[in-house]
Image (cartoon, rainbow, N blue to C red; front, side, top):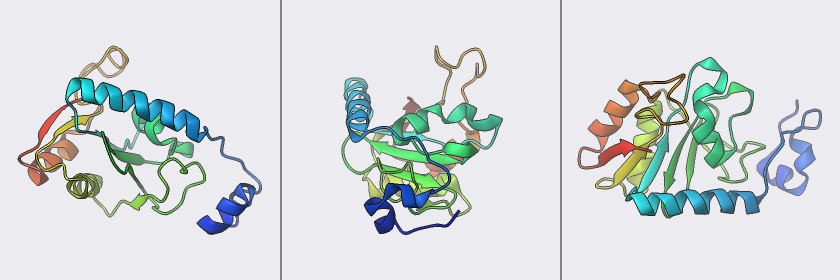
Length: 172
């Protein structure tokens, strides 16, 4: 497939993937989802949600990230920093523009450490003393059968805690 610039893709969305279309949801759907999630975050006192990338089981642990970004087709790894207010940051293995990425715009490219990129995004969002909800930190009614201990990677969570020692990390 021939890659095109974001500007070209904006003018002609079909130009980005002439032979293969990526189904996308509307901006209205984004606003509905983001509005509901942010409402629940405020109710629960969560300032920011972090969704970690998943390296296995063919997207099994990417539902939270995909719900918030709609990025991650073809088992691509994606992480997200989703503040209650402000800019959403998606982190991918390639960075740049993604055909299904209109919800967040350009993405940040992971530079070896996904937790490092997430920590940087959290700092840029002013979350040094925030309550940060981590997707999959503990089990939930949706993941109890396959992931009874949660699915967030221990090392990634520990690295974020070290990078933001005054933040409070909770399950989201």
